[in-house]
Image (cartoon, rainbow, N blue to C red):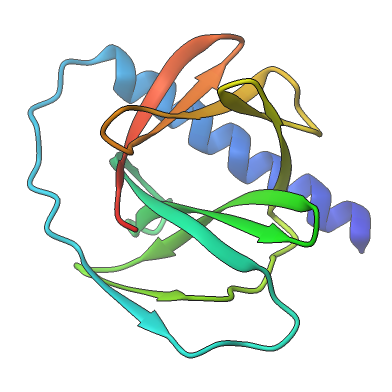
Amino acid sequence: MKNFAKISALVLLVITIASCERSAKTDAAKTDSTVAVKTAPMKVDSGKLIGAWHDEAIKSDKGEEIAYEVISSGHKVYIQAITFTGTNLTLNDTPPITPSASEIKRDGDKYVSVERPDESYKIDKEGNLELYDKGVLVATCKKLL
């Protein structure tokens, strides 16, 4: 069951990056990112939310919006995709770390995926999250929190 969760997480991330790569290559019109962000009460056995970013370029297979959470837990940092519908996204101050979360480690001014070293993440000057695959920028996600 643990391997299934890892495989599922990998499939979701590959689909997300592939979609981001496709959308990054097109010159799509800018969209209005008016997402209302609410924070929910704390949950037990969860990490600390560091930040959240909205990926305006892609949607899930079900048509849901996609956002990314970066979470710290002890000495480890994770990134995970979350989905929401409409413009209301509820974020937890201490979200659970899901099986699809990917551990990332700091490497200079960026973070690199432990499981997939070709994937890296960087925060730009405006606070937006940049996603890289093999050093190539594939998406820029707008900062929510």
